[in-house]
Length: 259
Image (cartoon, rainbow, N blue to C red; front, side, top):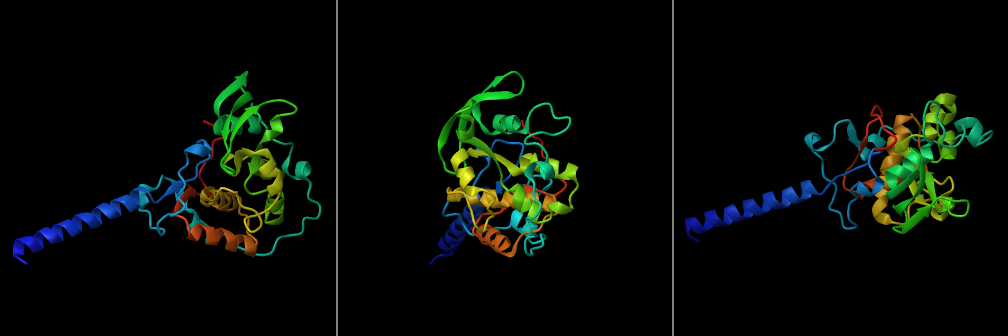
């Protein structure tokens, strides 16, 4: 082969390598954010490439790789559920002192599209693209229809109670129950099936959403200094090991309730 042919070959190989690297870096990460609708958060495809290290400059300020954050969370057995009282321990549903709108309405307004309100707060209708099932649900407020869309605590309150929330103050537990980082609007019947299951016993049926789902659980547990049960910890780690890096808010990052 002549020298000029060798040089052309080297240039072609070098360009191909640079192009492949650019594709991987452009599509390798997802961000979990409480300030944006769930449908806008990127999730890796089913055939995602092996996880790559995301350069610090590529990650939003104040975020951290969920798997790295998981490594900081202790794991041990769950505390007894004895004495757990949803309202007594975490406060009235969807209420926070000084918050003008209910948390449910704030999350509906964040996660639904084509939102219609009655007044400044009350969401009366909208469209949910459910991240758990992939279904499109037409939400209409009413006695017989409101439960079709529910607001899920990705880390259930009972799970939180058994993994460290007993040591939180009442005010901190109320904040936990209304924290948009932990909340997502979903299909009601699917949420009912989840109950208070953790990642070892329940995961969203849509597999492409599981990376974001467990990453949010990690962010919430870190923020409130909760631990994970061993089986729960292992399940989360196993899922994240198969994901492109998912960046989540660090423990000190603010999480606004809506847009």
